[in-house]
Length: 288
Image (tube, rainbow, N blue to C red; front, side, top):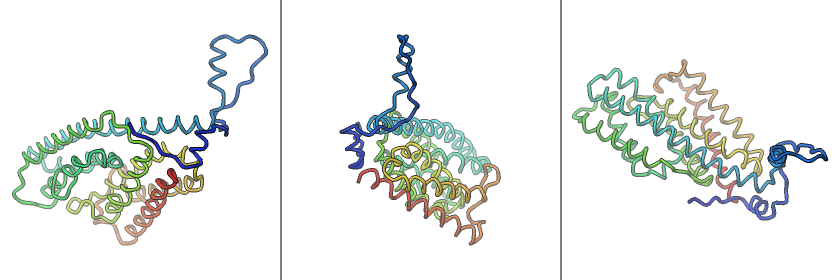
């Protein structure tokens, strides 16, 4: 079981429960006797204290992100099976087409990567897992045993689905995971160094942003009570990165990173750096 840590101010709120945060209007009750249903409705309409709100949001955030991880893992398992079938059969055109979209399911899970570090190293390490297939399909690597690579991808992906079943990362773990993801792999994708053979970095980056925004949506109601200005800044900076990505995509497809000009690369990198900086402030804001 994970223990959630909050700022001093939130801990005071949890202890005293003195500050009322109105979430829903209070219903006016008449003087006549009410039915059980009316009484229940009236109770539900009472404003939550700040303490009760934060406690509820902590639980919702952990459960929601856990469900998101499970959803992505199920889709990854199915997609990997299709990719491996094409890859082992020598249908390179189909395998190349499936590579980036299938990896997106994996990349959306990486805010929780510390929870499955060994599988992450096997699936996404340099020259292993997906990148072994990438070097073969896009880079012309020789001597690759496709049967072995495919079998390992399927087995490790199945193990990953089992590993995240029931996983409920705490708010602190989510905040730290997103900060590390954006500072590491998302920044690498924004520079074009994440997918050196396939140049599918923009797919990776979009998936990292998807995942980070999913986490932020759960943390935002808590963050607003701690630092409303930071929450608003993050709203704008997420939108800025999405706008950059939207200018590059055609439908759901992205061009190869190697086709971007210097101005496009600089603009994208700047927007990602700004978002990364702001997300890096969230863990300390929640625990100070």
